[in-house]
Image (tube, rainbow, N blue to C red; front, side, top):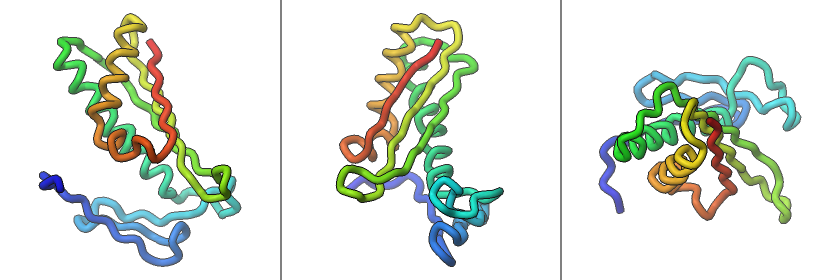
Length: 141
């Protein structure tokens, strides 16, 4: 087992997807709501998919910046947008999907594709999800 450098801790309370999540340090203190698209109230509350998307986007962007630096490439004002979907698979079970859209302005498309592919091999979220959920990775220049 990996010896963690850092361990995040969060607790969910209440009614699951309509409950609340807090982090042990108090930085995260969010009320949750099931999205309207899934039959819930939606509104101004977050949901687990948004939280996962935020974490995956940030982690993937860090991995991208790391592999770019190792390759001697400046990715400047790059961006990563993560779209996390939830739906039923062919057996009727809920399953996540992820689409990572990376923007690398002014870069040659082949190099952008190469960096995104490398980042997908380095990113801890990508490593955790590989083989478990569909993850599509794209680069736009």
